[in-house]
Image 1 (cartoon, rainbow, N blue to C red):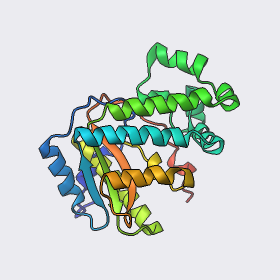
Image 2: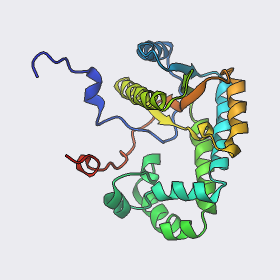
Image 3: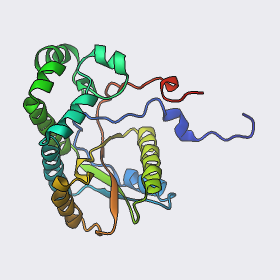
Image 4: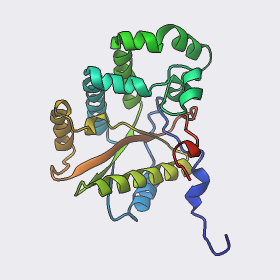
Length: 241
């Protein structure tokens, strides 16, 4: 439309992705860190914190791995994750949402082998132990492969805050896509059920995050090979005219 200035991030809407692969453990450059801080500095709601010291990386690997172990240690929470996991291409085509092994970079013959012999919905729903152990192992490997982590925090925690920070996170993901960076949320430790709170407090204390603040999003940043896009539902299946 004449007179309407296009947002440069718009061109990255279809290429943005949550890259769940192991990263190359290459920290962001000072210029990249500054660029992201400047970009997010335009927001008046959330604060962006970026960390890349070896000490921070070691602590986050421990915390994120432990958080996943807590997450899959409950049958009901495990069932929720399994429900959103797509075990094969047939399920991907049917539901057009969720995630599967392809988003973690598993492809070719290995993907066929995993989906047909090791990960089937029937076997996992009957006994989710191996599935949970695999999730913890994958979390440890992906976190350990990452050199730079970031989080968005707010002073208040209203429902509107949560929605607006979600929007800010998506814009950051568009910006990192434009910069050629990979990004992946790892937010289990931010869950607020009783079993997670002690670990969440440990995380906040280690990084001197005020108890009055809420960490809304926690994610990793870096460089990685691209991965298959996660399936998405058609717009007309969500919005009805």
